Image (cartoon, rainbow, N blue to C red; front, side, top):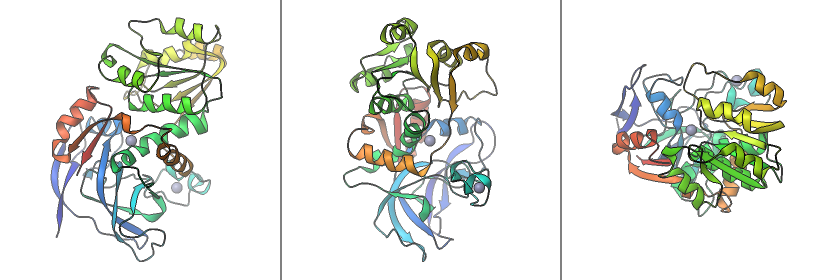
Length: 348
Ligand SMILES: [Zn+2]
Ligand SMILES: [Zn+2]
């Protein structure tokens, strides 16, 4: 049996992640394709799984943000062929029968088991995916960039399609990690008048400078600068129209309520990694504001994100800080966790 090196979460609990020899997966359903993985991104979710803070079914190969080339197709596959460059939505094993699936929301089906935590994922040489979840990589887009489309599609959906940016909005993004920087780019795409990217001292090395390089002049350190005063100034005293919470940090979550204008919108993307936090509930009521919680992605945002990245209006390349062979996973995971990186790509 052919084998491949794969990064596996071997058991429940903190840690238990190691490189193992695993059998190369085989196509079981006629509608599946075998993909040679060319690039796979490390997600905050992978770090949460390492620390036992996100659901998963071990033993399982990690990695859900990937790009690759089709090397084999099942007999019922009609839209793709060997040699096609693809990425895939991670909504495998959605049942197709429940209320959510039948209302077009397979991405939140309770039966869903995504590659990388529910079934074997992309930190390996090969992965099997059903045809129905594939998207073609546009010509000229690198595999590295394509591997970053999954998180970008999340942010695109949350900021632009669901919570929405209105032209002329004053937008605050809390947390200048890859997700926050993507949110800032989406806010600019949506016609925001001003986009403030807020971080802390630990973001001074890489994340805030990257934000500035991407053209966000209002990329500030809240431990050095007065964020509420800046929001007041840029919004003519009203408060922010939209706050994107991309930090998962309790003080920032509460600051979102402080910064939002009355009847403004808060888009929640960052996970806290904790069972519960303290939240200024009544302050939010007095804001008369909307708070949208988001998880996962639907077809439409993939389609649109690919188009905007291909046109250069979403600069995903600028967010890639690491590109290392899979064997170096440990140091790269450590860099990502210590926020010494943005998007890190592993090459299996
Ligand atoms: Zn992810
Ligand atoms: Zn379902």
